[in-house]
Structure formats: structure tokens, C-alpha cells
Image (cartoon, rainbow, N blue to C red):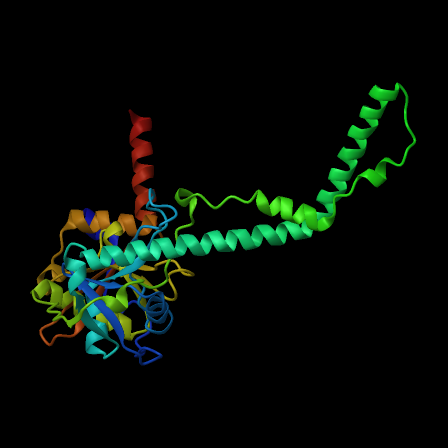
Length: 338
């Protein structure tokens, strides 16, 4: 069969890499905000902690205030995988909470607080802009004064020539009485406040109103189905081996497996979680498509499941390049015969 000739499978009791148990390097509880069945992190210090110490990456889903009309670069909050949330709770590294106000329309109190925050931010920017402009004027005062002096001398020279019909050698410079302090005062008088529509939007590293929200403990039932239990078991097994994991939906799997930090490493495996019967049988067309996708992205396609004892089983598939080359040669020969 084509799938059997095109793929190679191996069954092993370990994950795609080292089987050593690796836990979080720092014990600290983070608050995971639950909203519509998803877990979110609203504090950048918690995001940094999960990334550096717990090997949990998640994905940023918030728009950037300065660049809202794009989706290439996103900001807070960080959305965690359901498996990551459950693992944090079970390992004592986090707790799930619910912010009541986030599920309701903003109250008038929150609206007033937001407006006050924007107004305070605007006034601070106006003051800071004025201070910076004054410092700039003081640094450039001598050059401005010299420029004004040259302009004055040129105008006086032209004026004298028109009146007397010839160049006057009088002490024109003595008539120039402008001082450095006069220049500074004159330039400061020209300062205009920053237009409110041009104010810089502050990029918060933590939800600015988080302390004012009502915090409630929130139950986290995941996993609830057999498929979710398989996914969670596989996720825990790979995480305890020291791997980084992210969502693998773009590559037709459940997880992408990284040997190190995803910001520094490429994923080396695509893991799809299935039941044990599917692990043994599998769909030929599906396997061929999945292994070809994995091979084209320089990854290994892995099927993961649980045996009767609840142990995780892995079966990896690799695309045989020589088989593909033979098929191409046969096609070329057939074309020549035709």
C-alpha cells in the first residue's frame, strides 16, 4: 500500500526526546483569569515567569494600542492552552480566578476611572513635552541668538544702504540688545500644548484596573472528555521530559514540540493525539498527508495515545525521500515511453 511504502513507523514508550523529568525551576503562583472557557494572563511579569521558569509559552492575543489595525504583533493578554492551565493548577504553580467585571458591560465607575486615567496621562505628557522643549531651547539658545544677530545685521545693513545710498560703517552691532535670556523667554512663549488627539497611548505591562476588579475563585474542569484526557496526558508527559509545547493546529496536529525556547528553536515534531485503536489502524491518506506536511517543514510527525494502563505511547512517521525519487523516475520513464 502507498502509505506503508511511503512511511516508516516506530513504537516507543518514551517521548520524541529525553525522558528525564523536568519541573518548573521556581515555585510561584500566578493568577489565570478564566473567561469563556479560556485562561488568560494579564501581567507581563507572570508571562515572563511562565516562559522562563515553567516552559509555558501560550500566545499573545491582545491588540497593541499604538498599532491596532494589524495582527502580526500582538500584546497582552496571553492566552494559555487548556492543558497548560490544568498543569499549572495541578502542579501548584497557578490558580484560576474570575474577574466579575470582565464578563459584564463596563460600569459607570470603571468608565470614570478610565477617563481620569486618560486625562492624567495627557496632562503628564503635556508637562513632560514642555520640560523637554525648554531643555532643548536652553541647549540651542546660543545658536538661536547668533542666528538672530546675523539676521539683524543684514537687515540693518540693507536699511542703511537704502537711506544713505552707501554702506555705513557705524556700530550697528551695538544696536543689537537681545540677550540669551530674552531668546529663551521668547521661545517658551511660542510653546503650544500637545493636542489631545496626538497624545501617546501608554502600553501597560499589567492590566491597569486589575486591583479594582472583584476576584473570585473559578473552577477549571478540563479535561472532561476522553479525547481531552489523552491530550492532557500526552502534554504532561512531554512537558515533564523538559520540552516546550505550543499549539500545532497550523500543522495538522495538537502540539508542536521544541527542544528549547520556541523563540530560539524550531519545532522538531508535530504531535497528534488519538485513541489507541486509531494509533494501531490510522487512515492511510491522512498519514501520507500528515507526514508530507511534516517532512516539508523539517519535522517529525508523531501519533500519541494511551495504552490500557494509561501509559503514553508514541509512534513517529518519516517520509522516505528515496521512495519519492523512485516514483518520480518511474513517471519520467513512462513519459519517455509515451
